[in-house]
Length: 403
Ligand SMILES: Cc1cc2nc3c(=O)[nH]c(=O)nc-3n(C[C@H](O)[C@H](O)[C@H](O)COP(=O)(O)OP(=O)(O)OC[C@H]3O[C@@H](n4cnc5c(N)ncnc54)[C@H](O)[C@@H]3O)c2cc1C
View 1: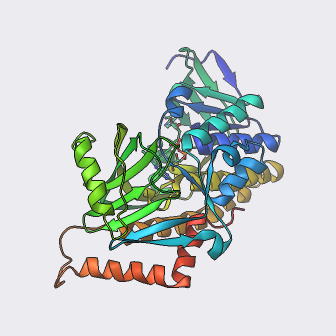
View 2: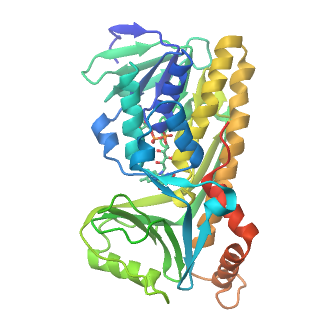
View 3: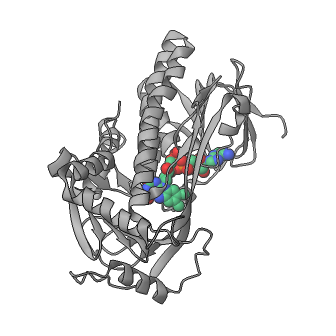
């Protein structure tokens, strides 16, 4: 890489301008700590990447109370529960009644727009479209981040701390020497086939449906566009099913005694989403910390990925402030312990929701009859028929209190 034309010294360099990176930059600015955020995608590209859609109550409070935006309260939809559907019947899990909390349907694209707008409004330094970001010297007190700006100019940052908020394919997390990191990984034998369809709303809230043909999720986006998913084989091509097959599959999986029917319409986006659970710890090493998907990924069933990213940086902002004030590495080290407690709760819940609702073909060794399917129905029945079961789901889904 050619020599940098400018060398800048922000207090914090953040690699990755997704929800974790932008929210951290915002929270640090409120504490008087300056940062520079680098992202290799353009703002337009990120704005058009469809991902998560459910915000926990505390994620909404974080956006509103820290002054990012209150648009979520106007344009988002408060959901007071979800439906669990199996054996052709829907069972409502009423969050508000069970735990006095709710969640909000508000697409990640809008969260990103709010955060990017807030950073621009407050004079934040966010650079989209940079390439070749590389980090070195995290074991020293003077780490260096090199990159090429969107206009092709080489740049160099000499921050006091680098934050890797660069998503599930993080380059930053690999900088931690192997002997100083532990990775935990679980791969699932299925994936989600996700579509955006131009149809009216089917239901006011999410329907999580377990059927013998596999899982289906009915979610919403707007009055005229809906987001929906079908369990599918991992590695399936997005064009493997025709539109007709997709609608038939939804109809078959949702079939039930209440005649729940899905209107059909143009499918405007389709993607296959792999399932994996991953955690790398510690989330702090030398002058590098990791946040969001860079440190952990969860399967999307429990809608935790985006929420975890926001919860991480809510903790991290305080730890960085303490570290800058005290000079003690203990303040940064505390981040891992606090963040991981929530991460492992979310890993457990995401895994639990996934195995509760997805079906696997074939019988487990030694089973007579489809033992796995009958056991799963027994578990679903236990959850919906007991207040304790419903409360457990409601508590985890709406999220544990953020620090
Ligand atoms: C297709 C898909 C669907 C999903 N659906 C759901 C869902 O329904 N519910 C849910 O809760 N979660 C879902 N997730 C997960 C959720 O979107 C993530 O957990 C969330 O985006 C994490 O935020 P983040 O800021 O940590 O990472 P990201 O949003 O991935 O942001 C990381 C940023 O870093 C940038 N970056 C990466 N590498 C570099 C580099 N080398 N240099 C500079 N910049 C870099 C990227 O461009 C990106 O903008 C989904 C994820 C995907 C991929």
